[in-house]
Length: 482
Image (cartoon, rainbow, N blue to C red; front, side, top):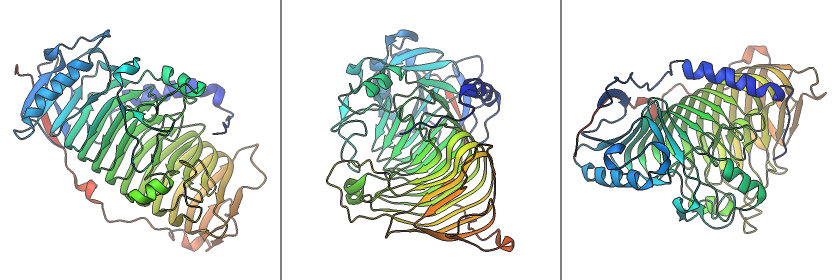
């Protein structure tokens, strides 16, 4: 990826730290942990499901000194608690401390809860990271051919899983992995912090994730996924530290998250080239609300580039973008196939951007040479409205594919204030078609101006999706000696 340095990059660290302090002191809307009692044997929190059985990591030999490996303690605790799957489920409490650990696998009808002063430290030893097969919809790892290191917190074929806390921290200690990636020393693809596969009814909430080796949160081949109140922090130059990547998922909601990232804050995916086409599982029914993002070299919300299984019915609103490369970006290419359609974005505020809107039809980056050059993506019914942007280098760069234009684009009620050193041409459009209304500066001619009386021309569905009907309840933890 070509790096673009904003005028504020030199001041970014100070700005990020100031905003981080404000965000971490603020009360998170959405799912909120109730203030834990000083007595660590009992506290309350909110979750999709409550549990009948409880245990603390310390009961299974866990040592929170920052240097003792707790991989076996985590797995022993979870293996023990898995016996309660059909008896009301179980929860594992991680008390205050620094808990060094390698990867561990979750179980169904299970809650992992991190105390506010608990820190999970990802092990630096590769031996604590088993290697697993590449995702079938990708055909290979993202960093290298072949397998991939399993994620720090991993689960597959699960139902009813909650990963939450009182803003406890998961530290991926990613510097070692970033350096191996940059030096070409990786044998396998880097691990993620949280990955849940082939699962349903998943909640990930009220946690702080820092320094991930690669992607932070990756629900894949899953349904009914709730991600709320997550803070994600990574150096803005760290490679591929995407924030939240829903991948071939149905009925997902991402709310009240704050992300500083070295890559896209949210990247919506569904498989890569011929592998994604064959797997054929789209991401659909996705809600994104109240997101704050800082990503100087990437997008606030990206659709693709791995979108070969399709992306449909994405609804994003109330978004704040600060010093980021682009607000909303669609990434695809010849050979991807699939589709991106029925995309609805409104209520976005952007401050210091390279592009407000960016569509790329020549992204490239193929899994291998086996992609089908006749597999053309369908990009249609893209709706952006009610947006304000300031200090923008270029309003939009919309590049479809010759012979395969992106159609049904609608942009309305958008005001973009250009930077002092802005591009002379604010809009650059090729191989696209659609309409615009109430856009300043006026959109390109391929987005036919409908006049100021049609500022409401772009759609945003008013009916709710099933994930909006999911209710949380007040749950409690009471330590029992099992």
